[in-house]
Length: 285
Ligand SMILES: O=C(O)C(=O)Cc1ccccc1
Image 1 (cartoon, helix red, strand yellow):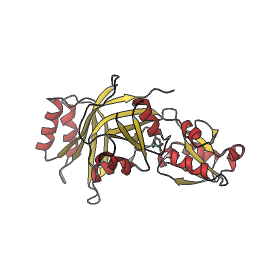
Image 2: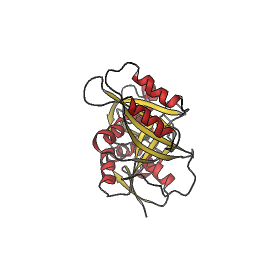
Image 3: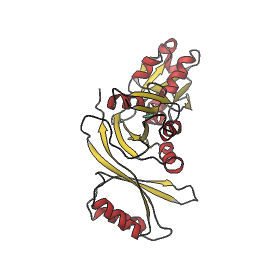
Image 4: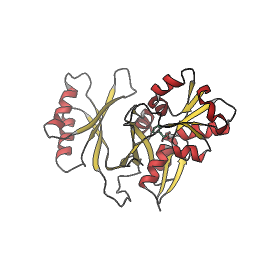
């Protein structure tokens, strides 16, 4: 039996992603993304699942930065899941949700609902929590606060909240990518076919070299390696020092990707493979 650590408590979107892909595994909640990643490093759980990127709000920087700077573990899989955000209130406040003064949620969930909040709850202030279900739990424990959480249907059920307003996310296409981490590269114990494969690289450019990024991109372009993401993150060594995270939409093969990496190294780039892994898509219910 596999044990899977996830960003908890119970009923986060990460929890939903875990149960959709690993229905029989024992799942263990952790309160923060770093705690979840540490748990797999320390062997408390076999795998960890944490959010990486949302279609509306972009990357979860805490996940990327913790993996790069604090605890390097290979990405062994990815789950892409649809996200529906609801406004959750204590049942005592269900009819008076327009009087809500404070909104609790994960920063990404609040960002996904900005237009709704601006239109309907202009005067409310925001309290950022480590997860959407931590927010739901807090609201359930403070029935007299004029407070709401933003989270999913399972969180409403788990923490006894009422759904005051359904589907408050601002754009219909709202999906999140979650990554699966393990101590070493491995095959996942999933018995259905993945929707595809990806390879993620971290690339540090040589200092002050004109056209370096252009040369990096050409190494992929002429090999017809299709990139699905390129993102820069601060190297945290000085203003203007960045590295690039690049996703290629195929498995690490024996020829093309190693050839591209050798070409980048010849250009004085440092290259690290963060993972080569299958991805699984969760269907909308
Ligand atoms: O807080 C959660 O429920 C998470 O799993 C992180 C998250 C937050 C917002 C959208 C998707 C995932």
